Length: 167
Image (tube, rainbow, N blue to C red; front, side):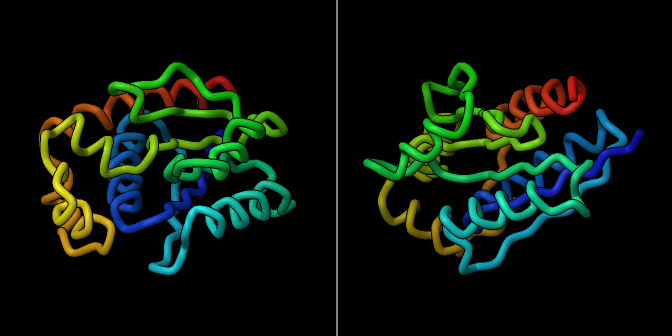
């Protein structure tokens, strides 16, 4: 049975990564996918929409994937409280979690921000001015996803595929 995966992304860079992961999943699963992102969607808005989609009867058969940043401080508590996080990947810069209340809900969480992940796996976007350009969407997605980032995203996509095919 074909199963939709609704994808929400927090920021421009997270959207770029989500698009790449979607393409990789298309190669290993028959599920259809859509992505939802606007320039004004911060983490809280993504999680609000995530919960709304999970509880909507019209999407009761769909997986919901949120691609977000872990952030710092107290804001991390929501993730810790609501998701079972798997072993961290890439020097603790990525976590994949399954919603404790609904196995259809999944998150890819960059710790603390996606820029840290990009820096660790590609040795790029490590300086403040580079990070600002990533955050503000001043870099084309194709330039964001180099060979080493694509390799890391392939591992994340495989983990997601394992979660999606168990449900």
